[in-house]
Image (cartoon, rainbow, N blue to C red; front, side):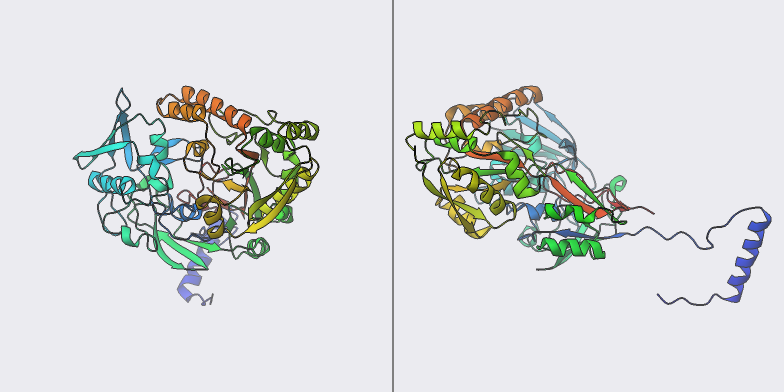
Length: 509
């Protein structure tokens, strides 16, 4: 910055002001106004999204850029995981649970000037649930039989069956409101109603957003003028960018082993929060020997979860005994159900007809936690006579094709990011090839009640069935490892849903 000399009149005013202050007995620490707080943010992410519209593709990185920043929903999910009003300011549910009547916020416009009202909300939901929908969570909308729009601010959903999770699902990235005339371009130029507007996307490098000056919710207007998402895959490069100040924050730092490298840094702070990222080693329950529950149970008893966490994620993680996290309603600690016991594991294998063990292959996606976990598991399984070969598998394309689509695998390992997704074990088809009618009935009952206490009890029963049946080896919940500038306020420390919600983020003066 070039500093210009002050004009004589300004110098005179300053001298007079200083003299007046001194004569009044005041101590002046500065003659210039305090430097204004920063209004820009450079935020680092490990994975670059494949697109920017969360209503047409599943990768969580999409929502981590656009959910609650560019796009909003009828409702939202707050940092504690609770459903809160958003574009719908209130709602009523009929006594039979089959009619949801939403009252919408008035005067809301999309970033390009299109009006948000009941007609556009109906369009967004019809698009998500329609025959040609490619929405990654199309199942969320399956029970919506019809939609009425009696006036611009009233939206009525008629359901074909009770859906106790509907409000929660409507808060997800896949359920955001999109405008009728911009959906074709939302993948690369997203248009929403949120506190930030899309500016540009330099693929392989960054996405830029700017403050939406016309944001409908004045009380929650963005405090930042500009946000840049920087995509940095390499953990060492992430650490270097943080330490040099090239990025201000990385809310999901990719290398737990480097977290201590920030200890004592005068500018940066580290945060360890919770997530919904459940690391499980899923088995193909339709192929031998994994079609035998005793084999699956034996493998679970051969695994010391704490050792896996130590080896895979530097001891930063929470052991789980089912497909559920301690953050979620009705959580039951089932890590003792099939606790580490190699001798019992050997006996069970012998009972199942494998006294000398067997050999199989695990397809390990090339993300740090997966091969690390697999290598620790490989050593443990060897102790009970089981040989596990590790096959590195490119993620997402090759892994999705082999595992999700072709079911051409025996075991794999992946972190399931979706909150409260225990229902994936009811899906047919799904990569586990797991079938249990009793489990399916429980998950159906969850939707037949809107009472949180009743739902929590049912979820507990469902967790117990999975812990007994072991369709996957339940390992641990990954923590949210955040590193950011100490003066940065408002970033979420916990992650009830994959996101980077920036509406309340600001810099200290």
